[in-house]
Image (cartoon, rainbow, N blue to C red):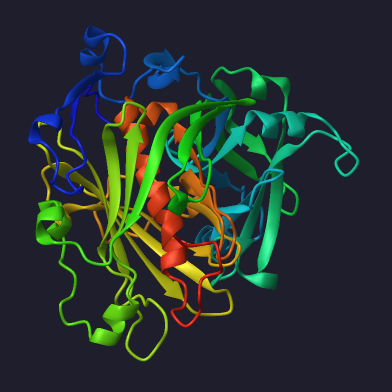
Length: 477
């Protein structure tokens, strides 16, 4: 996110143009505090206290809101060295160094992570201290739970990293009986985990020898505060709910969400950005057109009524030929847009979300999200998320906000990314909960654009339902 603090918030250009143009004014907002302070920043994030528009006795006022306490536990700089003690040290050394090595990283309440561990042959060498293999994001309640022993957990939780060496074919913790455990590193959760300050928990070599005497693991374990703003849609997205910020037991209205569904839009209703990637396929046969899920639009408004972000279907969700589902070969797509900061009544593309239905043992909805850097065409977009969410149970949508690689490069494991939102599955009342790291939010509009994306993710679960299945009563509007 950049350090822009002065923006022109245009009225909704997707609305009908039947109002007095003079009423389509723009309002200037400065929501980051001191202009001088913000303009002098490095653009890496806002470190002060963010302010929001809110209501007070019927009036719109600017008020600071505190983020919730989160911490980020980062594990990296992995390396393994094993002294060679054998009658044939050359042969044994070659065999060990060419065997794949990996580790399993465990922390109570989180999925098990796997990561490769490189061999370090020279005693003078050390792994890159800045290379992070995985991170865990903990809420304040997570840390408290880990510190307090319970009935099923008589002692404090620990970070456990088990290292394995496998024969040829073993990779990243997968290899069945072929893998051999070298040893385990344990780090007990302590009071410093809830101190709210950066703490270097471990950095350097440590002996873990179990089956391999003298084996040493190099790692760096760092704890950093990662405060987050947490938002929740107070009702289903299709019900045009209010969006509140959560802070402990307090709920503060911040935004409103407006959902509309139009079967057909005339050309003057659509902003030119609708055609940024591709127009709706004109060759869709009449039957598919009749069943297409299209024309859905979500507007995010601040409490003054100004539109600050939007998401709308740019490519309809239609069943592929010969089946009743949206397929990977023809995914539906949302365009996520934000107001043009130049002051014109138009929108800038921010991202494109594609979704389709995966058929298999576990019925899932696949997502692929690209960021569009300002001033670049779709070919220069960045793939920052590619993942599955259970169509029935719902799940969490992740996004790698620090990613700088172009489209086409595989994204990391979802648990190595930042959780954006959690949504429910089909037939369930979904009230998305959205988490935004304070370092990624510099102004109100930054938060709004992620909320628009979360709304699109939520609605995609419904849009990807099999077309032969009718929606449950009360779900749609």
